[in-house]
Amino acid sequence: MNEEALLARASEERERIFQRYERGRENLVGLIDPWEDPEFEEYHKTDRYGFIHDERLPQKTAPQKINIELEREKKWLKMLEEWGTSETKQKLHRRIYKGIPNSLRIGVWSKLLDVNRMRSDNPGKYREMLKLAKLWSTDVRQIDSDVNRQFREHQFYRERYSEKQCSLFNVLCAYSLYNSEVGYCQGMSGLAGVLLMYMDEEDAFWALAVLLSDKKYAMHGLYIEGFPKLTRFLEHHDKILTKFMPKLKRHFDKFGLDAILYSLKWFFVCFVERVPFSLCLRVWDIYLLDGERVITAMAYTILKLHKKTIMKLNDMDLIVNYIQVKLHKDFGYEDDIVIYQLEKSMEELKRAKLDYPGLPPPNELPKRPLGVFVEPDKKSKIGQRAENFSETEKQARANVILRREKAALELQELRVSQSDTVSDTNTTYDVPLHTSQARMNIMNIHVKPPVVNTYSNNEQKSYLINASKPKRKR
Image 1 (cartoon, rainbow, N blue to C red):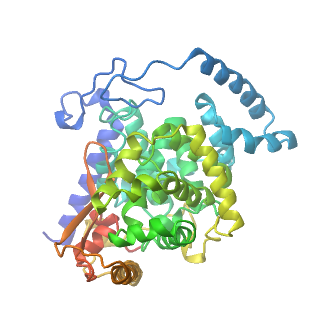
Image 2 (image 1 turned 60 degrees about the vertical axis):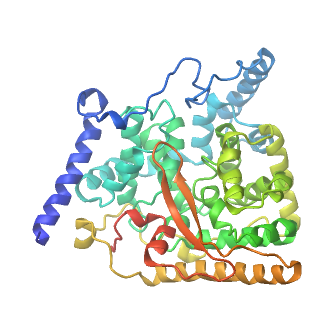
């Protein structure tokens, strides 16, 4: 096909995908493939947050707890009415750490993220970006694919082309034009998906914009090419482990377990699908209040609470499965206990001057003006990948290899001192980015200890998370 034909095909595909979301579920009767809708029985299996479970849920909340929740709601309603006063500011920290009533999260999160100001300062901008996305977004196919995977066990997203699925698609497409440096990166669907559980479509868009561009959260650096913030946070996480849990760090090194294998969703989507959702919301509450130091402290807290169990696991697969899968299903501690430990961890790290990885450097912040349209180049429009890595991607690749080499050297030293023996068998470790109906491997790392393998192009693009979408230059 010549270039004009490829451009026409890409345009037709984008238009076809948008039309299905614009029509919505009610107008697509008979056009939705059976495999696109998971089957769930809803009777007594939907929890208070909207997630559908395979087994009967425990008995309903005790009346005493319900009464406590109602009393807390009254206090929070008063705080929302008096938001911004000195009295409210004094109480805010303590009450958020106790937990925001679920029915009031929509109001509290909106205020913490200053959504109303963002919306009023940018009238019509969201609709403008959405209209531009229909004409120009090169990420539509990948967004459509991820929307079809995201939170399919939740009642809002269970049905294909449901109202919330359509909102999720719109938010991500609009943002892909609003922030031309990021566009769309896998993982953003998890953030937007949670926001849409508590906000309407445009509010969720502006909340997402704040999370990525505000220096308090600065998630922009996680999603841009090369993922510089991920590298910085992984290094900081390693420093914390080395200082406070050296035995656990050596245990990880013994089995060649780099933090990148178990912590990606901790940093990329703030523990979504890595801890039970009720606990995840509590962490989000605190994160929206106190910023990114909460993420580093929570990562430390998880390993601190489960150190004894992890130390008994003598296989990389078992360790990764425990941290990623088992703790998501059953964390083993009440949410209040975890938050108490999180607060203690933050104090402990602050005393050691390790609570905060530092202000984001310029390369982690937006360089281009946000909300200004940048036309994609022809390769991006067609959907072609670049044949070679960019300099940023090469640097990201080098950073990973250096981390692996360092771990291998530490492992060799450990073997010399402990006379450990390790099989020479090649082992492949798959780390899923999405754990819902469809699973995606975000990286395949082949390790043959103690020799450090170099990464093939395919493995490197797997690491770069966004390998399944075309590389874009704008």
